[in-house]
Amino acid sequence: MQCLRLKHILQACKSSARIHKQRAKSGQASDMGMKSYWDAFYRSRRPRDLGDSNCFEWFFPYSETKDVFQSAFANVAENLPGNDFNLIRIAELGCGTSELSMELIQDHQSSCCITCVDFSTAALEHNQKNVKSNARFHGSVAGHLAYVAADVCHLPFSENSFDLVFEKGTMDALLKSENTRPKSDQFLLEAIRVLRPGGMFLQFSDEAPELRLDLLERMKSHVWQREPKHISVSFKNISHNDALEYFVYTVQYGKM
Image (tube, rainbow, N blue to C red; front, top):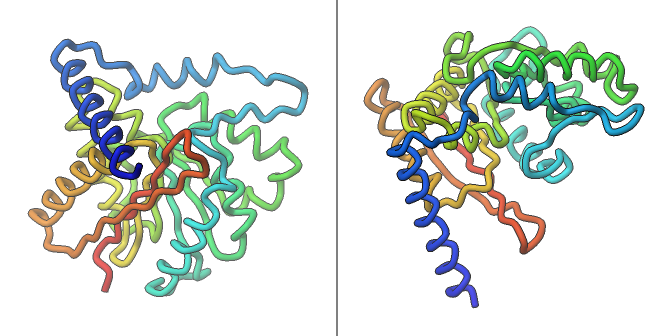
């Protein structure tokens, strides 16, 4: 049964790869790499009822990532350099209107601060209003959370700025945009550039390892050419049901 399932996964991956190539050749890629696409997407969404935060979560809610972050925090803390508050500095790349970072801070309020990055001003405005108006977050979250309007392929941060970088669905969106290869490569290189040695980069995705690992291995070779650093890549299936498969890809950068 497992062999049959793996065969189906491999066939699906090959089919997906052919579709990406066909779209790239025909110029029919979606606009999911464009700021205008996401501004329109988030502005078109309206609260379903009074008090509804109207957040949009890719793939799954924060509750299904708790174990992953708990392990990542422990790993990163081992090599945490001293700073004024000894906080784990985190960046979420392509936050959209997700409440993941808000809930992450609630669970680890005394040990982390998070910078959420997105180029959609509509998404960031929504998040800022949510933090101020939502009783669950107001007060406990605001002091540990910052929002920055920026392109994730051109981050406005210096090297070694963060201890932990993560994204949920951002890479998947870039892979469905025009100029897929250069955008996805640049995104990965930027994520590693702002990560301090000993830090971690997490990707939450529904893309199978047969496709995603190839991109991450190519990123490793690019980084090595620029500056020889040890980079390890691993993945884990974090699916909670048999209907859909989700993975977390972990990049450990320059661990001392």
